[in-house]
Length: 202
Image (cartoon, rainbow, N blue to C red):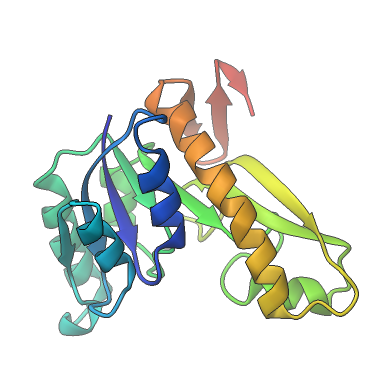
């Protein structure tokens, strides 16, 4: 299945997807970053994957940026759009256009801690477990149907950095697995609150 991956930073989740692409039946057509300095662009180049930069700072509005982003995506006619550390809130127009095709990985056990600084929030709340979630992207920020999660225990003395490192290792396992469910046609978005795997509501 043809896909496009959107990134904003280091691209370690991108790397896990690249490393597993053959096994998960994914052909990455392009990697797109909103930040020119994103190391993930180098990862794409090293894997001989086309990549491009659409710098959000060059646009007057989120809508203008999304129009340019959609134009770049549509050059590749992807069947899946993967957000692998893409740190931009997408407009309703974008979500409507690719409804049911957009997967995101988020570093918390959603619905806990949407948005940023999730690791510190989990520590501050004295949670015993934390983790990562893969979900369909809908108009609600980090609020689309959760598909699968991985948990990690929060240890005494954990910092946001040490916790983030352990969560990230689980993300690298979880995200390719869920993408494979999608590329095999097992995973579907029914509506803004419901997804199915093998025809069963998740």
